[in-house]
Image (tube, rainbow, N blue to C red; front, side):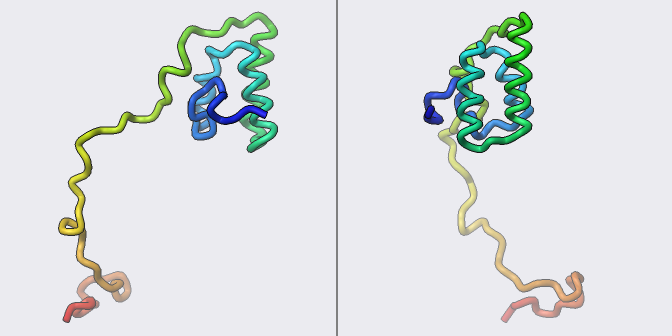
Length: 112
């Protein structure tokens, strides 16, 4: 059984099917077989398996893998060193629910 870190696509389990559809174009048949085996033994998602098997059939019929290094980019945004300006001081003050959804009909709204 293959671990998630040994798969040919980084963050495979987190990829939406639309992204996966594009990313598998550069994979050879052996890597597709690895993904199919992994998918069958883990999530076993029918649309994903159909996508992988269709691509495997295309390769068997003579299609060539496209260029590209799938290990280079995970598709996730990089971490930034800037941090977040959000703090407890900038958060909204808690309040009760609106009466009938109208602010004017809710006198005081949890105010002392």
